[in-house]
Length: 376
Image (cartoon, rainbow, N blue to C red; front, side):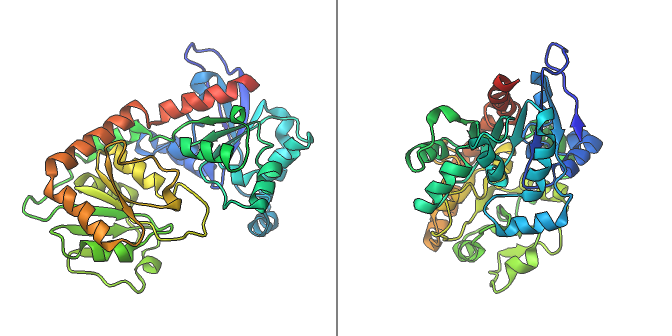
């Protein structure tokens, strides 16, 4: 799928790139194309905005050969289905843009061995468990990328000091939200969102990956608030959990616009992550954090290896950290926000300012374009 772009001067594209990811970008783009500002574009990683910088983008379909896709689940070389199709067409492009560096380690290896002539630029938002195996993998299958765009400065530092990648190869571009989408949703829903002033403040928690709802539920049961939890696979999440009187799950699949409506009503957003010390450092919960930032909500989040590459919410003045499995920590953090509404509101205002000034798709795309353009 091709996205024809023109730069800010109205000139035709000066370079052409092929983008691929660990999810079906073609479907996301089709939805964005059909719905415009009613669909968000941040999960297209700049594909809709790079045209402003004279970069024409082709989207590689996620799946063509089912057997190769199945084999990709049991190897360390990434998505064989996509990468082999990239090899068949790489010569048509000035650069290959991988929105997930662990989807394309085979391409990076071939680039390292000088068997792939087209430059490879990749997004990275997680690292590896330190050890000789991961360092060998990094040297062979990560270092082959011509440039690596880290979503967090701490990831860049770790790749340099822990895995010995060249600083010249690394840059930082914080992922950001598609602001026009959130503004359109806010305008559309302004009259639809009603809040009961007498009801306890709403704490909203969304998402499934590595979540620790058991600890969060224990943490809020003595607080004067209501907790709502929603995610796409609620049945597997709620299994074995005991709900206090002030908490409930959304049943079934809640439409995305309905989720955003709940965000608008929320007093604060909770992102509880489990204790998985054997997992590599990551940016789990980043999508939910950015949604909260875009909608101006304070955040309470678990701080551990899973969230190492998420921005420091306390340093930014937009939220509070809690240690993994710390029930009293959740009680204290959420209790503090509930007892200090003016400070909670100020955190939300700072969050929204961050979205407007730094953490948005336009800023992100400009940084990605600056990395891609030298290969044009």
